[in-house]
Image (cartoon, rainbow, N blue to C red; front, side, top):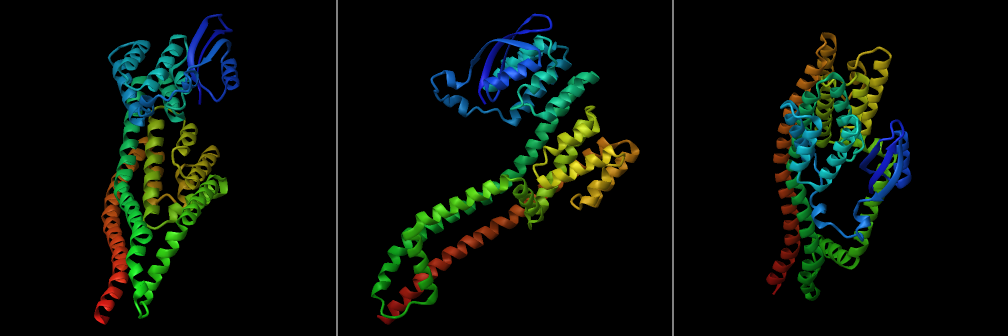
Length: 405
């Protein structure tokens, strides 16, 4: 979205207001400022569009990551704990930041706070970096007078989620690279190498073995129609992605993922860890339960589990517990729902959810290691078997030719 630098006048007191906001359009920005009681007097785009559309290469490789948000949050908490005022703390964080986009956002947040807007509302103006969970927790911290503690919890939460994601992605990266390299090597063999080698079979009087004839046929087809195969694969991927974006397609795909062998259980473990950690962090920061459930639903990344949380929220509104609808869904294990039920009865729901999260973090790590140790040798055997099969289909007829001669 474009980044707009604006200047206006607050209707309530006539004070001049300046700031930077990202919005879908100028009309959307005007509407947003009008809701906040600000009369717009000047406006200009500050993104690359007003710089001759030059590409800022440095900025392209300096995107704001979740780790940057966690670091900024922790720095802000440390400064506030040391007795530094909020505006001065924000200024120090801006000076410390190495990311241009984050500095711009934090500068606008400081300006808004300086003009009397709450910190949570200022963060909410930059939803690209500070999501609903972040803003609600900051809002709860402001109202309860525990902003420093909430910011520390936020930093811990973001770092924990980054570690969990890093473990899963890091463990899956090597097998994925191996598979991609294997596909490339086999494709080169079939399209380039095999046709050159098998051309000598044209002088062979005897009938070739069935597996060699299949190999030659596949190789000739791939060499002649590789572009059709490429387009077909691309078309399938595009159609699949479009289908997956429909509500029905997304739900069915996410349900398939949860039921898939090997990866289904891992996906469920990661989701339970996220659910427990997010809900525990929000509740311990003073966010109301129903609001916390609504925010937690958005971090699961699975439409099936999101529906489970929506059903649980409806049950809570009717006076029921959280544990029962989670148990009835069939997706949350009995141990998890039992611990949540015990936490509700004892008034220690946050602690129980934190325990569930820690337990599942450990289970995710051990399962990822087990899957990696299983997948890697399977891929090696698979790729080796395919390469060996190609070699055998070529060498056996060559040996027969030698014997015949």
